Length: 195
Image (cartoon, rainbow, N blue to C red):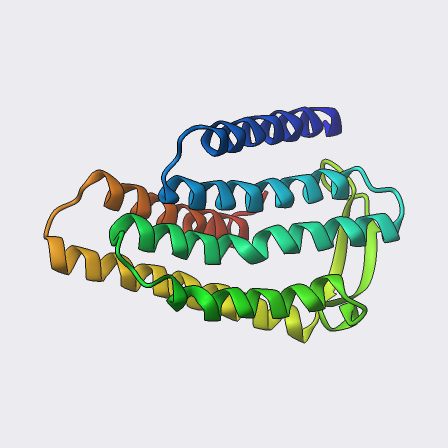
C-alpha cells in the first residue's frame, strides 16, 4: 500500500511542478504568478509528506514535518493574495505585509532551534497504511492553527464583500469559493470521519 501512496504523491509532485513551470515561463500576469506561489507552497508540503511516510528514523520524520509545516504556513497567505488579486485587481499589496510577517515569524519557529514549542514527544507509529509521525502539539502550532482559521475567516469576508459589490458569480468568484470551501470540507472530513 505504501508503494501506491508513493506513486500517487510522486505523480502529484510532478504535475504541480509542471503546472508551476508552465505558468511561470509563460507570459503570465501577476495573478498567475501568485498562483505559482500557491503551487510552490503545496509542492513543499507534498514533498515533506512524501519524506514523512518514507521515514524510518524520528530525526528524518521531524525534518519532513518541518517541510510540511513550511508549505502549509505560506499557503493561506498566498491564497489571500490570490483572492485579493482575482476579486480586486487594484488592491494595495502592502496590506498583505502583516500576513507575510506572521508567516516568517512562524517559519523561524518551525525551522529554528525552538522547535520544542512547535511539537514535542515525536514517535513513529506503524498503524494504518504506512508509518507516520505522532506528536503532541506545542503552543506555536496552536497559534498557527488560530492564524490559519483567521485567514480562512478573512477569505470568507473577502468573498462576501465581493458578492455585495457585484451581485453576480463570475468565473473568478466561483474559483475563490471553491478554493475557500474545499479546504474547509477536507478539514471537516479529516476531523470527523473515521478512516
